[in-house]
Length: 188
Image (cartoon, rainbow, N blue to C red):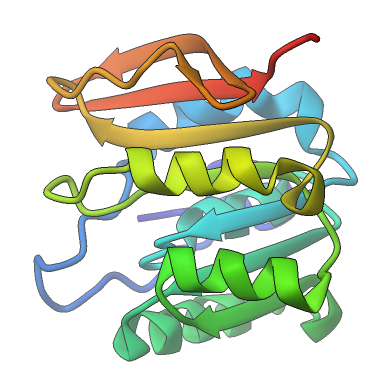
């Protein structure tokens, strides 16, 4: 697993020792960033179920101002920390939270944290991503900046709804066993 482009291009990231974590493939990550590249520079990026941190690190490598990494596994958080250190990312550009994604978002609302411009959510394929999308939709003003995008990586056989609250699915990309569904705020 390597950083594909940007300031940290070519850096090899540490991988999880077990197959309990399913890192986003280099190919799918490249596809994702080909789509969102014009939006990344200067953004606040949220990597939910971050695993190795490769997605948030790629965002930083391509010019994101800040990445927040969230994973419920302590070992994954340690792996993310090691990968951030490997890339020599300054502390002020990255935060790591050892938390369940839904619990983190609820805390972010109550703590009145800054909003995010891009949210990437990659839960285990056995988990249903819709409840978390609903949570984001309910708390959209507190969690998402203007023109924010929410991206969900999921199994290609799972069809996500076209609309979740005020979030509208605008695009689906399928590659191998994975799909990326893109959501933006519906115009009112």
